[in-house]
Length: 172
Image 1 (cartoon, rainbow, N blue to C red):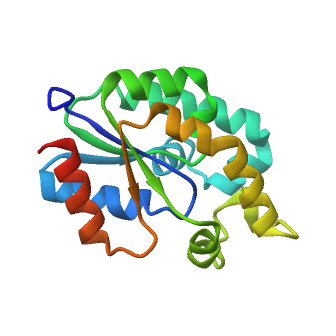
Image 2 (image 1 turned 90 degrees about the vertical axis):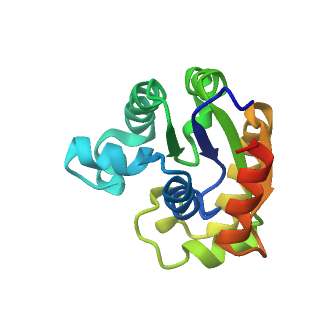
């Protein structure tokens, strides 16, 4: 696994992919990318607006293209959007081009970490965010597991502990 020079973080919203990814990249002296931030940079609009205008399907096409391009780099840490693994092409690219780390978390932690975040279109307008997260988990968790080289729980651990676990498991 050490020959793979990229680390790709997958997992549900609120798992800590962006926070952990940014600090992991800093510690390993790698470049950090966040696929959602990259989509916002390229469109000049936030994710919610892209979702509203193009729907989830249009957003997912943009996301697939961004992941295709970003995974061509070497020596990066990439935090992916929670739904990026819905694309078989994206799953294949992530698996083939780096070490995939699945950041696992509970529905309770997701709710706590995302309750005030208006930038999450799938739950920000939902009548029952818990139900939405449970449905997403049922669909997506098997896909995260399918492509994960490493699984790390983020529930009750500090960012530093999670990063140390990733570094140890990746063998860096």
